[in-house]
Image 1 (cartoon, helix red, strand yellow):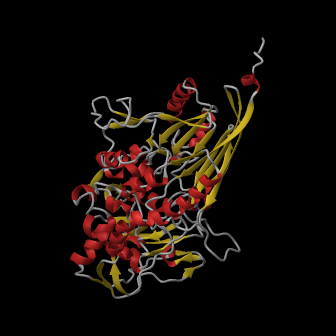
Image 2: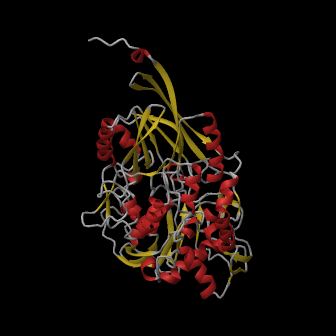
Image 3: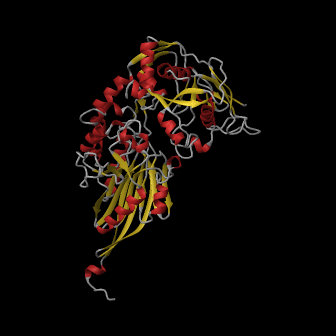
Length: 551
């Protein structure tokens, strides 16, 4: 074999391309927490924008990608029906190249999502979401009428073609099962779809393959192909995966030769990927890749983003400050019990209040809920809307009643209690189970309508003691009970490997169906309960129905 000895053939140069990834910003446009109604400089698009500008000043080849979950939380969902949603305004100003929908993008229905995406100037991608056969595609987002969005794109920088594949978590279909928002769509295997798209991108001349995936590293709830570890192991042709969804800070992980990074949550970090290429004539070779995550907590906010979001910010502050009623007592003691906050170690005025609300509207025998964090607080005096949201964070939280046996309820309560480890000789504090505590969400559920103790001297499966209904009736394994809980939690427990896997547990009632998709959320039921049922005044006292014991 001979090679033509021309000047072109002999020219060799190197170039670098930097890819910046954000994910799970969840409405943090400004450095402001609307539930607490205070500044929070841990992360925001405004701070990310400042960092991106600095990086662009030093690097000519920069690609900016958003991995989803931008339009939900921190009260930005208040604007879901707004004709001109703020998120496209922000992303367009920042110059994003790619947007991949996360599961929370589907929370408001596809017409709303389509309106939001239509205003984004960047390329919108998701390879694994298709229309059902009889569904009508009226969006024209994709050249392929069977798809909601295009699967891939190629971005060329300095003679290098970066092939980008978008993936949304297939778990979205389960998350939206009750809403029906995805009834006209189906998800396909991320692995098979990626393999197919890589072949296409290579034929189109892509020099490197980057997957932008709203999926975490590990499989979710043990379901295959819901994490990018499976993807990397099955498709080593991928060069880089920028992940999301699981709210983890992953600067760099290499699986089967695939470089993976994830930028945590709430706009606190940006994933920074560096790709180095050697170009010889028309031949382009990837010769190096690296990644890290960069904190934005010390970055100043971009003043232009503050200007763009100002009318939205002002409206949210007015909503946050709306008076709902008053509590006659402090609702959560601000002390720790053997290292654990009062909120997580015993019944408080807040847990009693939330379960009272659930019991009142649902008519269930037993109900449950979970806090989002330990530092919940509501002192004696005025209750504002922001106090409700601060203490119960899950915007979409509902109450769905399932008909369970006493045994099934006990199994569920034991699962919740196993959020804590069994105490060992010499322990002076209680400890969370690290695997559970490191998960994306808090999975320590608190129960109302029952009296019980969580005895951490006992081993797994035997921590719930003295269990009875609040009227003193002992709960037996065979008795039938109406148990009200978050539908998402039930679905989690009913999946493969869950405590309800394979069991037929009938649905009796659902707050979002009977009361309404908005009014039927726990947040709004809490507000209506204070205003309409309690006429603006609650006592805020604890029922003292449960506690952790052992030390």
